[in-house]
Length: 232
Length: 232
DNA sequence: CTCGTATATTACCCATGGGTAAGAAATAGT
DNA sequence: ACTATTTCTTACCCATGGGTAATATACGAG
Image (cartoon, rainbow over all chains, first blue to last red; front, top):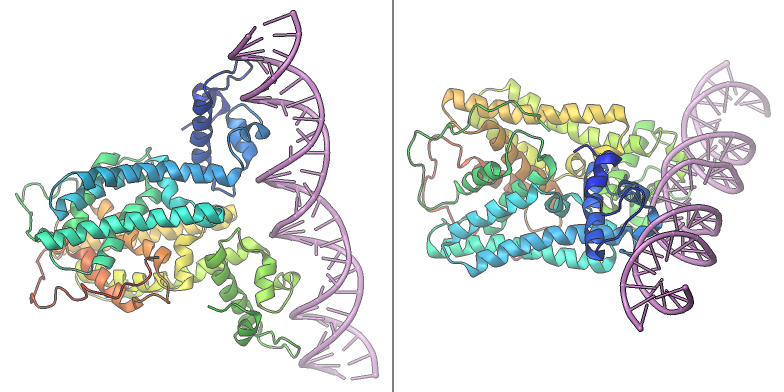
């Protein structure tokens, strides 16, 4: 929202003039919050470190107290988003339920993450802007997410909640829909995140579910007619 | 594939040594072919005009005989991809069929485009790297695609081939899956483009179709067990 | 052969922006 | 209050890479 210097100062631990003191971690996080916003707004290459610093009422070199360089900031933004997804997976793995249930849980949670800034960084940032080292970490993490989707589908087929299908393609199709949320969703929009998540969980598993759940025919046009929100 | 100067020379109208003469358009296209490949390989910002020129056995300033600048090359790559999608839409619009039929046609064709280099540029390139003028064109074109998806779904609901649903979200879900193909598909992979397209057309409309088509139960495990190809 | 045009090359310009050095200002400890 | 440490600023470096100017080479026409 209004990214004017004035409003940025509110959430910035650095007070405009002086009297700037606070915990180191809080500042680090503030840098990341600002950076991820700018990266999403203007793109990574369209954002300079001066842009980031300026919005925080500091100067560029000050950033180097907290990060080794621009690419590390990018990586850390991504890492926060990844952490949230990892938490989802861990939570679902530890819980019970059929394959279909777990798949739906993952879809809901993953969709919600995709509507947040850090979540978007998982799909909007370019891996090639990272160091080789961090790039490897990202690749591994992406594989982990893919494995989770496939595992739940596999589980579902095994326990009968999901009917046989091409696991690989199904996982890609579902993940693709979800990842794309990170490209079009904006909080300003008419659609609340939770609603999107729930809708996607149904829609994306409709074709997979072994038993049709198409219950009462009274709810289908759940929200056929909706406010004509911004297309993009 | 082997991007060595030697192999590049094969498809390059500029012969390594001399005797370089050919139609102007052929050269323009050669530049675009090379550029789109490099942009996809290394990213737009990771690719220099020298990279492009070098692979064509020429020098950077020679490119300016055909394009006003780097961003115009980017735009032209995108435009070729868009043209192909526009053709699909025009063809489907001119043809007949139910809403569901048209939707499936679009999915198949769009998926196939997404497996090509120019198709990928529709979703991998960053609109913010374009001039304001071209950016507007792109935005308009994106809206057009979105409208096509929504129109076919709307048609389908009207003619009874698709059951009532949230049109906006359904279009997003389908387009998202398809767009994501442009991020993971690589010709080297085990999956042929046509097969992906067909599979997606079924999978993505399974939940929408009014009448279940789940025909013979003999074909479900169509390709459950598949070669463990590269995950990414 | 010569001129005009198209095309390519060499050599250069220069704005941009990530990153660093040196030192000032604030903070904490004793 | 004095010192050590952390944090931040001013002033700078400089590699990169898009873009341009001047020039050379090839080619078609007369």
